[in-house]
Image 1 (cartoon, rainbow, N blue to C red):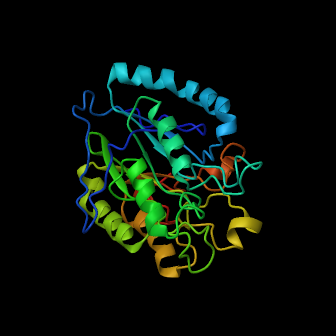
Image 2: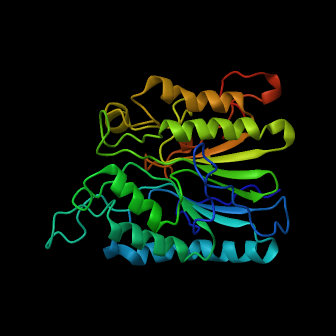
Image 3: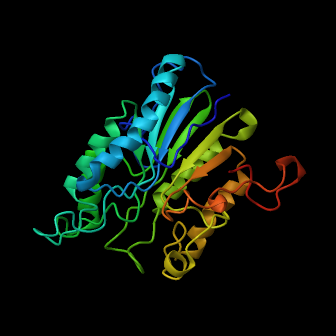
Length: 298
């Protein structure tokens, strides 16, 4: 089975993956035909921080993915792209004209959506800590979030896509910036998404053959990934829902309990290119017991 094709140059897909959230009308999306049900290719894009002055670099990165996608489409067609959020540059991209931050603006998200769509495969995105940063354009998080969802053709901040037989791509996105209790750069998954995710993993057990690949901007606490002590840790924006002890622990508890979760992809730290411990593994075989409590998740 071909599990994933992943790169830190990262990729996209036009929102064919929506959520089946509690209280939501979103549905699980599946490809029209799973031609080779056990094969799939997913491109994963980290923090793009797109800057319209540097589009040549993004074109070069995309060119690395296109042959991989073309080959996969010709073989089995189970192909998708997921962006891990932080789509725009968090500074002015026209400093001689304006001091407005580019990240989180309509212009930013429309440019990012166009870029992600240009890979020619379905894409989805999870919101990062900069994706609702359109402070000059939007007065509220709600208005900023509505634009983000509309531009990326998303019904909800979370998504679920069946990429291959009993294989789910699942994402959750941050929904708070202005209304953050502490730092605005904490990646906050709201309770509705957490409840939805818990139900999803309960309803798709490993014992029935399900495999779940999770995507969030920041990692869950307990992942063991290298972090930036002097930036994210001390400022309370390192892990998902960092400042809420109960919610912060919930994600790794679900990983430990549900062996269907096979991998969890995150960005945020900008370290994956250089450090081996930007990837962690379960320390012991699941058959030997639950300790050290990273379940079956990479």
